[in-house]
Length: 221
Ligand code: SF4
Image (tube, rainbow, N blue to C red; front, side):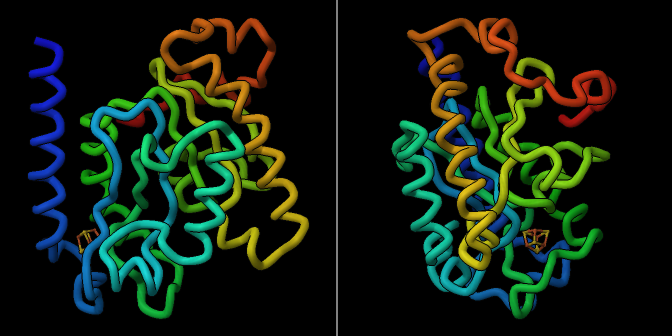
């Protein structure tokens, strides 16, 4: 019964991704080679949400395949995760021209796709990469510099914001902080995934539940 439920989620995710591939809801469809819905298992215990596809992602139709993607793979491994176990996507699914920041109306147009992916993939932990993903998943929070490496909780879901790997490739200080965040993430993951500690232990161990009161009032999904 449970298997049937999850295979249904995988099928629904495939249909959603087919819809994204043909989407023309915002201007970003005009310059894309491929839409980049996301990749990974469904369900998945861990989900990664970045900002937007870049040049190589647009060419291949896959997320995080350039240098930032290689760094993400090694960061995931440092946290004890295989990339193939993680569902990886972005806030917007089509590449902005010249890799500019996505505009608010583009993020809004694409928002239902990410919401639906989260519902279907049903992760326990979402790793949020960079300020756009942070603003999308924890609206109203302080900036990424202030909150990176902290643990947020929302409706049984743990959200872990950190820097975008592309930012770390441009700045050595950010690179070190990003590595440290992923090293710390190893312990958090150990608490979340099946066969290890109960999720409540995360709280008892005093991991910072930053701005938890504010989060309690947010309706994300
Ligand atoms: S970015 Fe999102 S909303 Fe805009 S065209 Fe691509 S899939 Fe559609």
